[in-house]
Image (cartoon, rainbow, N blue to C red):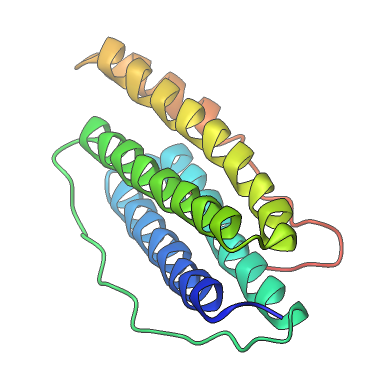
Length: 171
Ligand code: FEO
């Protein structure tokens, strides 16, 4: 059984993950509008992963006998100044998500909720990976600058990313 405070915070994290998904889908659409199909595909996979993150919280709440509650998802931006500006926003956004996950872990520790702590460990590691991946792409975009051939090479590379749903789970 989840304590009230933990349930409330986990429900709020579902909303944060759904907002991340919506933001990245909006970025996918932005990249499509620039004919950067690899970037668009990478962002679409990212949006699918964020939906899966939200579902992980949803499933954890229900498996603990709680009820997930949906809230309005904030409207994402639709346009960015450049691919680099979009990725810089992703990095800032993910740093914010990391802070939220850390706050959830602090709460689970304070409430002595051991199941929640174990559940959150996956997210702590995931955030390290996400920040590293996004930071790496942003750094490469800075190096590429206005070199369009470098941009198209990166576009081809990012287009190789595929979404692999975990066994027994669809998103
Ligand atoms: Fe769900 Fe990008 O963290």
